[in-house]
Image (cartoon, rainbow, N blue to C red; front, side):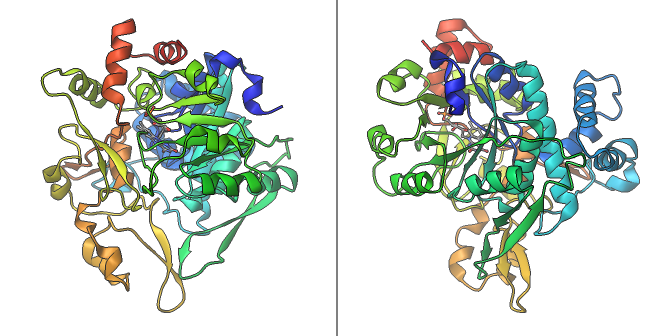
Length: 469
Ligand SMILES: Cc1cc2nc3c(=O)[nH]c(=O)nc-3n(C[C@H](O)[C@H](O)[C@H](O)COP(=O)(O)O)c2cc1C
């Protein structure tokens, strides 16, 4: 039986994976508790865990901290947990952090074990807490991005250990995911191809044993792929992807680069896989999509603006006020240049965020989180890492082709700016990293419709009901 068949036909609403920590355990767990599919975004979850542990260290009675600690206690390699608690929670002093608010973590390079371990733990905690909140109802999924290849397998290991039902990948072609999940759960070891420019076949090996000390039996999550083109969907159907999330260019976050008109749902249905339709479908609703042959719908922006979302509450309130401002409603633009990935990115024009050119230009370029850095072959044959949002001269030294340097002045540091949107901004001296908000292009009409039906504030339960009308 496919994962979606385990939930009621009229509750097949998926909360999309939204990074960084916008769809965390509270939101994903709530949507699953309502009977739908709650997706936690695994992106950056290692650093989210480290920063939350640091943020909450002066507040030992904090309820969320207690829950995180309860979850960590169930992780099957306690010495890893002790190391993380020691480094980011118990013994953090200003000597460690220097001028910064948060202690740096190991950069996620190929073979960087500490970064891998932190990502496994962070994903585990999120998926585990989402499952606890769901109380056995609905499904819990874990979302990763193909553009961050060094984090895919560690996120999968965390998801498997927590017993997630689904593992879903977008931003790239997730053709390695079905095999990876099978290998990790059947043989306990797997490998994943890294995306290294100039070196096509660099694989990193992974082992479950390092994490699952007692060899607790694990189950394989279902593998879903996010697609925007039928040729990619066809390829995924051939490699064992078990459901397709079909995302239109109206969706929040990254979009696939446009290449002609979007194919209708009917063309995807021919591959014989359950289809989940995403991007601007909140008002159309679940039953209309099911009448066309779709299995489920995926909603992002409305959930991102709900009380359960991980978006910083002040930033969320400011964004919502902008949206409902009848005189001058907040705009969402599809920005071709702001993301270092080179993919178009939906930018909500919220005051004080890097959506504004002056806020972006004021920021000194620092590349310290480095999730989106791309591996490349250096002149001496070794592997280097680069990102068009790092300091410009530093990046230019690393590239041979001027094409890569095009528009680099307009690239934002999605890593730091999205951490800031989750209330986890790094501070360097007096300067605090500004946020960036992404939302889908139909968000204004979606919010107004929910507000008319139920009044504000938006909650996950209201969104869940609204889209099932
Ligand atoms: C704040 C936000 C962050 C997002 N981040 C991701 C992400 O990290 N990975 C991903 O696959 N999709 C991401 N998305 C896309 C959503 O998962 C979802 O497919 C999309 O938003 C659906 O369209 P809607 O916003 O019109 O409902 C994001 C969307 C939003 C609004």
